[in-house]
Image 1 (cartoon, rainbow, N blue to C red):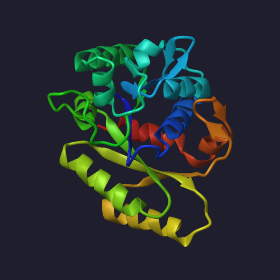
Image 2: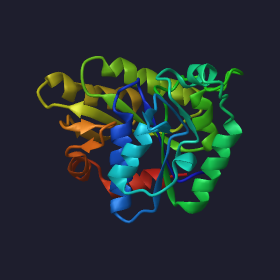
Image 3: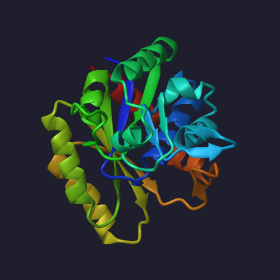
Image 4: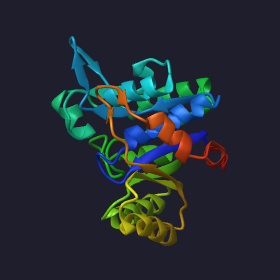
Length: 241
């Protein structure tokens, strides 16, 4: 088993990259030899004719990670659509073997890997039906589900956790993102989700202003994760067999 976690989102734009960046920063700032891994990214930034994976650049900037883009994100697409559609539009089929090779390279170099998916869990990567959840299972990592704090999150979170478990993915924790503290609904969501899933909420990240992934604006991200995530518990989770 690879030591680390695969960050799964309940949906697109739920805050996976911000949460993942915060986790990688926190681990590296505490001396843990940790790397980020995002196998496929669509909607890359075009700078002077070069495609830059914005999510990857953001996590590197937040955490101080120095690793080549090609190793962290082997497939980068310009078109902001699903990975499979982007690969077809740009005539660049996704070879899962390449993803495996890059992952093995990172495993040999780093003690921990925090991987991030693309969109939700049920995301096709190849024409033969290979899905994101197949990759999570194949990489043999524990998973954390990132979900919204507000209305509707119970349904999305429980469905995601239940489906992940049904295909053999080990969900070890849930992180609520965008908590405001202004609604009784948010606190009830935390309680109900823990009860229904029997998975602990390991972090409640408050809504942060001033964060822009593409512009590399980090706001209070570092301070928020220092405050809200217990590093020792996170390491224990990643070391579980």
